[in-house]
Image (cartoon, rainbow, N blue to C red):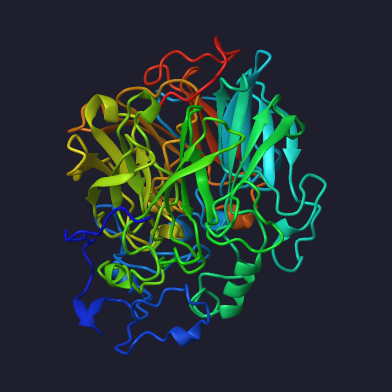
Length: 610
């Protein structure tokens, strides 16, 4: 059920190179492809593909309008289309500086206060060079790190940080690469059809006196076997690709497991839950037919207590999203997890404009028709204090729909109490992550999207400081400083390194231990791990950093542009794990994090702090 409306606040917009005009009654931005005619929905027989506005996909950018400046900084283009595979070389960039290395910087950059304790390179320590999730568990005095992305997974024994061992490796490598359709529909030695390792929260359950893992099962976001970013092959132009994606029969929802050890053989399935609202019984879903909606996106928010929050679109009509290969626009659900084997749905919330029938509200958004922007949640609520512990406020990052503040004091009645329209930054992902680790102490949260393009061919993705001391009136009051290479480097801006540059996320709330007041650790793609001192919110600074080489001996050529993709912090042992296209690094900083513990942890991880 919908609990809010868009309101009448002015939506922020990045400064554009050119003019703004009205075309067919909606905003048209300079550099876009527009049509004054009514949108032609007949291009797709699928009724849920949004044609609320004219086709205004951004066109190519004048190469003279962006690039390196006389002061050795980089001017980003103001508006671009989504293009994750293309390169866009510019004068003075990686193609010029590192021609012998295919345009990628082979150097590494490290501040004196950050130490590399270990590097585990190569394919064995790189289940996926583009993206992985992580979790930590402790069994019998040993600490294990899980790194995975659906079918590709590793289990490491990281008890000795300097001597990490691979315990288990899972994949679908035995499925032919040229199989028709979705390879996850094929059985393999490690996985049954449509089974995989979804984004997980793992917490200690008092009921079971064991770890319980909740895994998201969502439709894969990169579905090149059905749809692609480019015109002619995306959801707006390829009705057969849309139909094929809809016909897939994987679970849309989440699974709950009990863990009695670190290996897959130690999982015991407790529940299979569908978020498809058309299912007669969500705990006994019909998996013989296609399910509606997105399933549960990314890592569910659950800390082992009664309440869980997930991001999901519960039916196919939750579809108002410009992203060219994704069919859904996710909102938020609350679930009762008092008995993890029998989750109960409490409430469902979304912003007006996300669901078919709400086109009037959707047209108010200047992104309408750009066929580029991600609209809707990518992750569940960001919760400073769980409601079981008296928490009343949570934050929903909704991509191009902005940032919403929800009252979660009664999870069965989610209510929006504040909203913030974020400045437009297209292409790339907007409104993806909210770091709430400093909220209890300062009232500030840190909101960011992340880049998708190589060679900085998109607006820069700022990390916004948002003052939410009054949750009903969140406001942007600052930005974290932009990372820069050290003096004497061959580059003066990270855009010259090759690959993507900008913030990803500050690890995960599932990390063991309590995040440190005044310190944020961000993954920054080709700028690696960046450690920000935010102890003085009015004067944030970069206190330390480590940027690895852009590739290793076993890095596939196609993955060089995705240098790093995640950090995961063991706050209890004061170790930062950095995940790259060439394995993983263990980083410490005695000055910033405190004295590290590189051996067996003093106490086992049980439940997440914040």
